[in-house]
Image 1 (cartoon, helix red, strand yellow):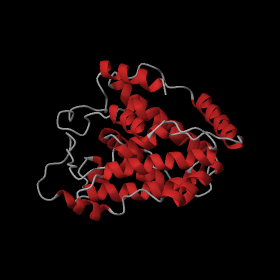
Image 2: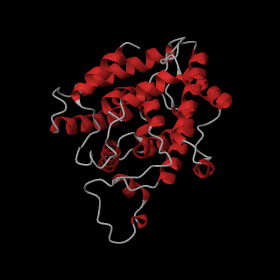
Image 3: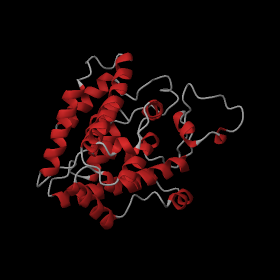
Image 4: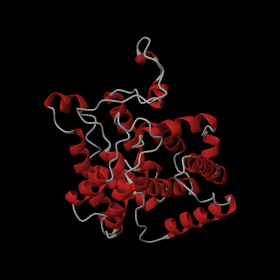
Length: 289
């Protein structure tokens, strides 16, 4: 998935989580450590894995709002530095004080609002759209180790780093990540609406992986239908309009930003991106919604 579509949405959500009071430290810890397995771009998964090793996220950091906000700030800057090195970003990183004050104010304003609009939809829908289907075939990263024996002897985090995980392993990680989501959101109204939405429409149809595999049904199609049902239920609970007018529009929009970062053709690239001409056309459409 093109990072310019889901990246801003994802960063907004992560900064808000870090700047808000944590109500379930273990859930937040687990959810963030699963991020490297579910991001909708193999280069982003690899980078996030490396950054987590360089700058581990501990429960002590999560329980300290300032420390947690600083951790996200540093990780975000590492990503910006990578993009800048690739010639994909020409802006300087903002100061820590500016970012800290902005997100602390945004989180406080959001949680005090009587009608807090849900953030992060582009991020959520991109992850849902990236659910591996029955024809999923991982293309190893260019720097993946030689297959001298069996890649399965490597631990799962390492296999993820080099895009060597099986479809079943990705489904398992996605199942755990989605299950934790309602409990880690930064706003009580969001947590309540997502919990009620899950009770109403159920958790994502990923646990039935083996059954769907046998029936050769589309896992992605089922998850996108679920995502639309959740969007409707969450927005109904928050008394706000859905960001997409229909399931058809949702699938069309997110599908238009699908990039080739998982294909052999795109294996030399460092970030999932559409061509500039195609992107400008998509961004124009995206702003109209």
